[in-house]
Image (cartoon, rainbow, N blue to C red):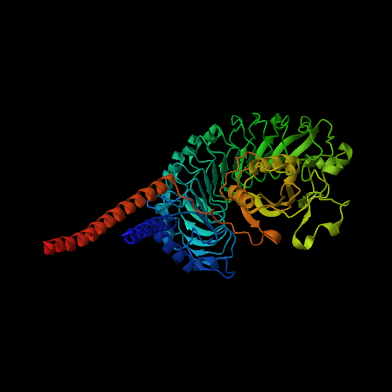
Length: 602
């Protein structure tokens, strides 16, 4: 009898274990529909460098599929779900699969800087959880799906530097949470829908270098959150800049260069934090408004228009001014000599003033600008008396071209043999410990719409901005190089170094994941000076070349754990009932022969 009970107990334990194991296994598998969607996505892509070879086996959330990051707890359905698809700069081509729309809990879709062609699947518009749609730097074509206008949680849409065309869908006026529209360098056409003025949270509206036409919507002056309005190189023929744009309460940058605009320059003096104005290469007429601009203004570019009358006195007393470009207009009377007098120049600060090719005929006072100031006057009548007025140096054609910048990384006192450069180690330039040899992370980084014209005066402030956002010490960042690109945009290569300790000179994988997560999720605090940024690459080489940037191992949520416990309890109850029935039947078998034997003995 005891053998029977032992066998039944062992069987019961085995069944309970199998039940629990089965429940745990289900809880830690990826939703099968999402697995199928990922396989379809891969089948639509061409992967010449075999970056996605890990997608050929195992489970997406448990087997370190490249670029797949999952929620680390199961959903209410017991399955794991894809949270991010991060395929930045992997040399992928092919097309985007409609099955992207089956990743119904995903928050980030990132295909930045690949060679993907074809259209944007309308099915992406079904993903209600989507927060970041990042498709810049590909070869996408076709029109914008109206369905994208119904993404209730979308924070950022980046489609710049593609071959997209057609109108901006009116449905996009429903994107109530979207702050960032980065749509520059495409071929979008037609009128900007005035309905977009209903967007309650938009901060960056970048549609430069397209084929937009019609008029500038006056309704945009009702957008309370707008920081950057950048529409350069479109064709708003005959349109005027609405005077009501001067009422935009938070505007930091207005760039409407080469848009075929006509009429007067609007008075923007009531915008309290305006940093940057570029209205050049239009057909603007009349005088320059005389009211003083924000004290934070760094850049004023009104060149290549038909502006006339005198240069107003409001350009003096602007302490952060870096560039004043009024060339190629019809400005008259005198050259002001007090523009730079209230500028507190730091050693790295510069002020560039360009008054070339106007009708300026005299000087108001002595021209004695400091060495920090570049003044250009050639092409004005006043240069006919350059020797007499002693302004020869301002009437020439020479100009200092800004060359690419780099940081001083001198570590001459350190022995190069002690830091193996062939393994991508180097001395940390600003380390508080002399000759600290470490391997940096390389980050390609670009400011897409900065509100400055000259970077060196803001070099240190930028370092504080980045290291604060990444929770690093100042010495852990080195701006290896920077250069201005067309836009203007500011491209940089950053090196991030591990913190000094006596045990390691490299980042561990969790730190790499943390830093990359901050950069790819665009969680850096917004900066009016530096504007929006984009991540060009995140280089893992040397000791980091085998680091897998994937989600953490899934864990069991409280809800999942409760489900497992309840499931196990149910299994145990079923097993107990089965055991009880078996024991009852077994006992019945023993009792029946016993009664028969008793009857025979009587």
